[in-house]
Image (tube, rainbow, N blue to C red):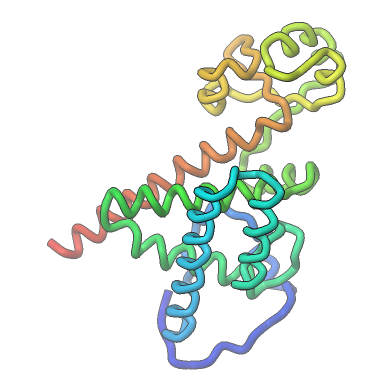
Length: 242
C-alpha cells in the first residue's frame, strides 16, 4: 500500500476489473491491498474502522449478540460509516474497498501487543459473525466456495439412514426437524468445538453438521487465519525495530 496526495475519484458500482478485485464484500482478508492511497484517505479509513470496532465492542456489552436490536444498531452504524452492511448483497466497490483497506490499516496498528491483538481479533470476529449470519443460504454457499470451505451436503438417503443418530446428537433437533434441515459432512478437525460441546453426530472421523451450525466452523477458520496473520505482522515489526 503506497501513499499519494491525489484525491481519489469515487466509483459507485462494481464493473470489470473492480468486480474481479472484490467479488464478495465478505472476506477473510487474506491478501493485503497493493494500490496507492492518499494520506487523507488513510486517516479517514483508519478512524472510521476504529469507530466501527468500538461500536461492535459497545453493542456486545449492551446487548445480546444476534438479537434484533443488536443487528439493527450495528447495521445502522455500518450504513453511516459506509461499510458493507449486507455481505454479498450490495454492488458497491467503494464500500468493499474501504472495508478491505481499513482492516489492514488497523491490523498494522493493533498487532503491537498481546492485549491489542486480542481486542482487535475479538471485534473483527464479532463483525464477521454478524455479516456472515446475514447471508441467505445461497449466498452463504457462494462465500464458502470463495474461501475454499465447501462442505459436502449429505444426500436424503444417508440423512434418513442416520436420522435417529442426528436427532439424538444434535440439540434441539427432533426427527421432523432433521428431515427439514440440510446437514454437511465435515472433517472432525474443522468441527472440534462442536464435537467438544456435543452438538454434532460423529461417525468415521466426520462430523455431521446442521446448516445452522456452519457459522461456528467458518468463524473458527477465520479466527485461526487472522490470529496467525497478526502474529506474523507483529514478528515482522519486531525485526524492523531491532
